[in-house]
Image (cartoon, rainbow, N blue to C red; front, side, top):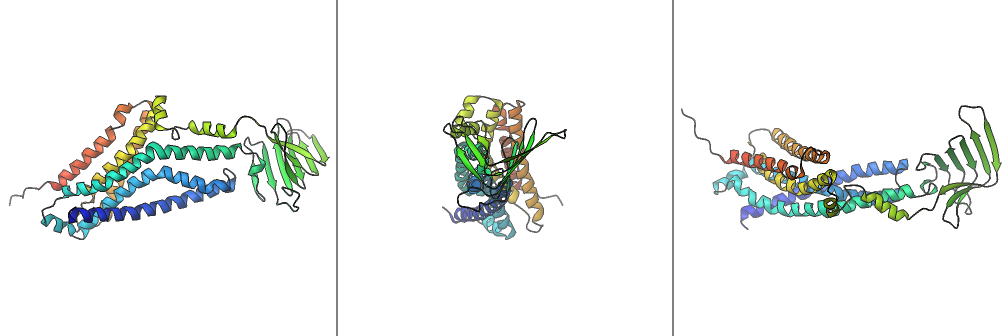
Length: 365
């Protein structure tokens, strides 16, 4: 490999590593804040936050890799122009077109990794995320209750609040429960509570000594009951929760394997296939597009050119999303949508490169 190609490949790889690390850190920071907020609100369990973060990061890797490659190539070309290194390369008989081979030397492996992620790893990660959430939804109401925290049941009919137990013989301390029925609204308080599982698999929350207050909405009718023990049904044993979780996960188009999407032969399935195929192609197109976009005048400010390059990349990704939506709604055939946007962007990149390579004739005096 020549000195030119080796230096370009090394610099692009270095910039890509820095950009990729930065984007991943930002992504994880925002994601963890959102997941911790969901855990605090009782939407997910605190024990699955890091698992969901890991699987969600896998689903974001294709886009992050494509964007990192685009920014790395763009900043590398721009830096060579700003620091007048391009003058040295041009004086050595090289042109801007000679950048394409070293850029592709980096872009092709990245595109292969993106293809592996979009076609195989990301659907698997989406299935894991869906299963995690389904499993939490299928857990008993009591399992979602944490000391000092309100928790709502799946159907919204019950709200629990429990304190930490004061005795080793109790699973929960003071318990407050509100239950909304078709006729009566009930509020129950108890000094303690425990779980009881029946032989048929039904689970009950058995409250210790306490009180129950029943109120019929719209009427002055009220009932007060004191009890030594009171059982509240939490869940009934029906089917295999793991099998139900997997079945629900498979229903999402993002979570379905690519071959299954092909077998489904629906507009939404073909739209998802188009997206999975488009991301690796977009990584290559963005890398090629960054070469002419990064060729700037060192005498001018750098912010304007970088802003335009960023808007062009953002427009490309939005057009891909628009094509996916059109394919899903049946407005655009898959056979056209899968290549049309990429062909336009590739032609635009080649046109910009031709403009940069074209030698203008001198003006007449």
